[in-house]
Amino acid sequence: MQNKMIKLVVLTVIFCLYQNVRAGHVINAAKIGVINSEIIMKTPELIKQYQDEIANMQRTQEELIKSLDLDLEKRYNALTAKAKISDIATLEKEQDALKDAKDKRDLEAKAASERIQRTANRVMEQFGKLVQEAAQNVLQALGLDLIIDKNATLAYNKAIDITNELIAEIKAIQAKSVKPAVTTKETTPKGK
Image (tube, rainbow, N blue to C red; front, side):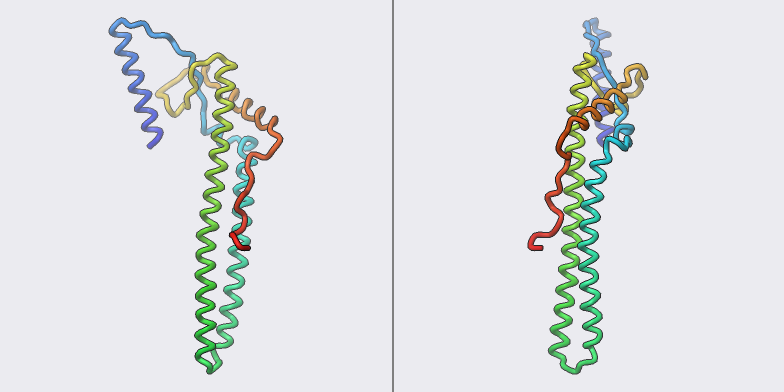
Protein backbone atom coordinates (compact mmCIF):
# COMPACT_ATOMS: atom_id res chain seq x y z
CA MET A 1 0.00 0.00 0.00
CA GLN A 2 2.79 2.42 0.95
CA ASN A 3 4.68 1.66 -2.27
CA LYS A 4 1.53 2.39 -4.30
CA MET A 5 1.12 5.72 -2.49
CA ILE A 6 4.75 6.62 -3.15
CA LYS A 7 4.41 5.74 -6.83
CA LEU A 8 1.22 7.81 -7.04
CA VAL A 9 3.01 10.82 -5.53
CA VAL A 10 5.96 10.37 -7.88
CA LEU A 11 3.66 10.09 -10.90
CA THR A 12 1.77 13.21 -9.79
CA VAL A 13 5.01 15.15 -9.45
CA ILE A 14 6.17 13.96 -12.87
CA PHE A 15 2.83 14.95 -14.41
CA CYS A 16 3.03 18.41 -12.83
CA LEU A 17 6.58 18.84 -14.05
CA TYR A 18 5.53 17.79 -17.54
CA GLN A 19 2.69 20.31 -17.50
CA ASN A 20 5.11 23.05 -16.43
CA VAL A 21 7.52 22.16 -19.24
CA ARG A 22 4.69 22.17 -21.79
CA ALA A 23 3.59 25.56 -20.50
CA GLY A 24 7.12 26.89 -21.04
CA HIS A 25 8.10 27.19 -17.38
CA VAL A 26 11.75 26.69 -16.57
CA ILE A 27 12.46 23.87 -14.15
CA ASN A 28 15.63 23.49 -12.13
CA ALA A 29 17.05 20.01 -12.50
CA ALA A 30 17.45 18.26 -9.17
CA LYS A 31 20.40 16.03 -8.39
CA ILE A 32 18.88 12.73 -7.41
CA GLY A 33 20.32 9.57 -5.95
CA VAL A 34 18.50 6.25 -5.93
CA ILE A 35 18.89 3.51 -3.34
CA ASN A 36 17.66 -0.05 -3.14
CA SER A 37 16.27 -0.48 0.37
CA GLU A 38 15.83 -4.22 -0.17
CA ILE A 39 19.59 -4.62 -0.54
CA ILE A 40 20.18 -2.50 2.56
CA MET A 41 17.76 -4.59 4.62
CA LYS A 42 19.43 -7.80 3.42
CA THR A 43 23.01 -6.71 4.15
CA PRO A 44 23.91 -8.96 7.11
CA GLU A 45 26.59 -6.79 8.67
CA LEU A 46 24.18 -3.85 8.85
CA ILE A 47 21.31 -5.60 10.55
CA LYS A 48 23.09 -8.33 12.53
CA GLN A 49 23.10 -6.47 15.85
CA TYR A 50 19.39 -5.73 15.45
CA GLN A 51 18.58 -9.33 14.57
CA ASP A 52 20.65 -10.51 17.54
CA GLU A 53 18.73 -8.24 19.90
CA ILE A 54 15.40 -9.60 18.71
CA ALA A 55 16.68 -13.19 18.87
CA ASN A 56 17.93 -12.67 22.44
CA MET A 57 14.56 -11.24 23.49
CA GLN A 58 12.77 -14.14 21.84
CA ARG A 59 15.05 -16.71 23.51
CA THR A 60 14.47 -15.12 26.92
CA GLN A 61 10.72 -15.14 26.46
CA GLU A 62 10.70 -18.73 25.17
CA GLU A 63 12.66 -19.85 28.25
CA LEU A 64 10.14 -18.12 30.50
CA ILE A 65 7.19 -19.79 28.76
CA LYS A 66 8.98 -23.14 28.84
CA SER A 67 9.42 -22.86 32.61
CA LEU A 68 5.73 -22.01 32.99
CA ASP A 69 4.84 -25.01 30.82
CA LEU A 70 6.97 -27.28 33.03
CA ASP A 71 5.19 -25.91 36.11
CA LEU A 72 1.84 -26.62 34.48
CA GLU A 73 2.91 -30.15 33.65
CA LYS A 74 3.98 -30.76 37.27
CA ARG A 75 0.69 -29.40 38.57
CA TYR A 76 -1.29 -31.52 36.10
CA ASN A 77 0.61 -34.67 37.05
CA ALA A 78 0.10 -33.95 40.75
CA LEU A 79 -3.60 -33.35 40.14
CA THR A 80 -3.90 -36.58 38.19
CA ALA A 81 -2.25 -38.46 41.05
CA LYS A 82 -4.60 -36.82 43.56
CA ALA A 83 -7.66 -37.57 41.44
CA LYS A 84 -7.84 -40.90 43.18
CA ILE A 85 -8.32 -39.11 46.51
CA SER A 86 -11.89 -39.18 47.67
CA ASP A 87 -11.62 -35.71 49.24
CA ILE A 88 -13.58 -33.70 46.66
CA ALA A 89 -12.78 -30.33 48.27
CA THR A 90 -9.03 -30.88 47.99
CA LEU A 91 -9.40 -32.09 44.43
CA GLU A 92 -11.46 -29.03 43.42
CA LYS A 93 -8.91 -26.75 45.08
CA GLU A 94 -6.11 -28.38 43.08
CA GLN A 95 -8.13 -28.11 39.86
CA ASP A 96 -8.66 -24.39 40.49
CA ALA A 97 -4.93 -23.93 41.14
CA LEU A 98 -4.15 -25.72 37.86
CA LYS A 99 -6.63 -23.51 35.98
CA ASP A 100 -5.10 -20.39 37.55
CA ALA A 101 -1.60 -21.54 36.57
CA LYS A 102 -2.77 -22.20 33.00
CA ASP A 103 -4.39 -18.76 32.82
CA LYS A 104 -1.17 -17.20 34.14
CA ARG A 105 0.85 -19.07 31.51
CA ASP A 106 -1.49 -17.93 28.72
CA LEU A 107 -1.31 -14.31 29.88
CA GLU A 108 2.46 -14.51 30.13
CA ALA A 109 2.70 -15.99 26.63
CA LYS A 110 0.64 -13.10 25.29
CA ALA A 111 2.74 -10.57 27.22
CA ALA A 112 5.93 -12.22 25.94
CA SER A 113 4.70 -11.92 22.38
CA GLU A 114 3.92 -8.24 22.96
CA ARG A 115 7.38 -7.64 24.46
CA ILE A 116 9.03 -9.27 21.45
CA GLN A 117 6.93 -7.13 19.09
CA ARG A 118 7.80 -3.94 21.00
CA THR A 119 11.48 -4.85 20.87
CA ALA A 120 11.25 -5.52 17.13
CA ASN A 121 9.49 -2.18 16.60
CA ARG A 122 12.09 -0.33 18.68
CA VAL A 123 14.92 -2.03 16.81
CA MET A 124 13.46 -1.17 13.41
CA GLU A 125 12.88 2.43 14.49
CA GLN A 126 16.52 2.72 15.57
CA PHE A 127 17.71 1.17 12.31
CA GLY A 128 15.47 3.57 10.39
CA LYS A 129 17.03 6.52 12.20
CA LEU A 130 20.49 5.17 11.38
CA VAL A 131 19.58 4.88 7.69
CA GLN A 132 18.13 8.42 7.70
CA GLU A 133 21.30 9.82 9.27
CA ALA A 134 23.47 7.97 6.77
CA ALA A 135 21.27 9.11 3.86
CA GLN A 136 21.57 12.73 4.99
CA ASN A 137 25.35 12.40 5.19
CA VAL A 138 25.52 10.85 1.70
CA LEU A 139 23.16 13.49 0.34
CA GLN A 140 25.44 16.25 1.60
CA ALA A 141 28.67 14.51 0.62
CA LEU A 142 27.52 13.93 -2.96
CA GLY A 143 25.78 17.28 -3.30
CA LEU A 144 22.40 15.69 -3.97
CA ASP A 145 19.01 17.31 -3.60
CA LEU A 146 17.02 14.12 -3.17
CA ILE A 147 17.46 10.43 -2.39
CA ILE A 148 14.62 8.09 -3.26
CA ASP A 149 14.08 4.37 -3.11
CA LYS A 150 14.10 2.56 -6.43
CA ASN A 151 10.62 1.24 -5.62
CA ALA A 152 9.32 4.82 -5.79
CA THR A 153 10.44 5.20 -9.40
CA LEU A 154 9.19 3.90 -12.69
CA ALA A 155 12.68 3.79 -14.16
CA TYR A 156 16.09 5.27 -13.41
CA ASN A 157 19.61 5.36 -14.74
CA LYS A 158 21.82 2.93 -12.81
CA ALA A 159 24.52 5.62 -12.76
CA ILE A 160 22.58 7.46 -10.04
CA ASP A 161 22.29 4.37 -7.81
CA ILE A 162 24.01 5.22 -4.51
CA THR A 163 23.05 2.09 -2.55
CA ASN A 164 26.70 1.10 -2.03
CA GLU A 165 27.59 4.58 -0.81
CA LEU A 166 24.70 4.50 1.66
CA ILE A 167 25.71 1.05 2.92
CA ALA A 168 29.28 2.27 3.40
CA GLU A 169 28.04 5.29 5.37
CA ILE A 170 25.80 3.13 7.57
CA LYS A 171 28.80 0.90 8.33
CA ALA A 172 30.91 3.98 9.12
CA ILE A 173 28.30 5.31 11.56
CA GLN A 174 27.97 1.88 13.18
CA ALA A 175 31.75 1.65 13.54
CA LYS A 176 31.83 5.03 15.33
CA SER A 177 29.07 3.97 17.71
CA VAL A 178 30.52 3.01 21.08
CA LYS A 179 27.32 1.89 22.73
CA PRO A 180 25.07 -0.90 21.44
CA ALA A 181 22.22 0.32 19.28
CA VAL A 182 19.54 -1.43 21.32
CA THR A 183 19.12 -2.08 25.01
CA THR A 184 16.60 -4.60 26.22
CA LYS A 185 14.33 -3.01 28.77
CA GLU A 186 11.84 -5.82 29.07
CA THR A 187 13.29 -9.28 29.52
CA THR A 188 11.21 -10.71 32.32
CA PRO A 189 7.73 -10.02 33.54
CA LYS A 190 7.26 -7.57 36.36
CA GLY A 191 7.35 -9.15 39.76
CA LYS A 192 9.78 -11.90 38.80
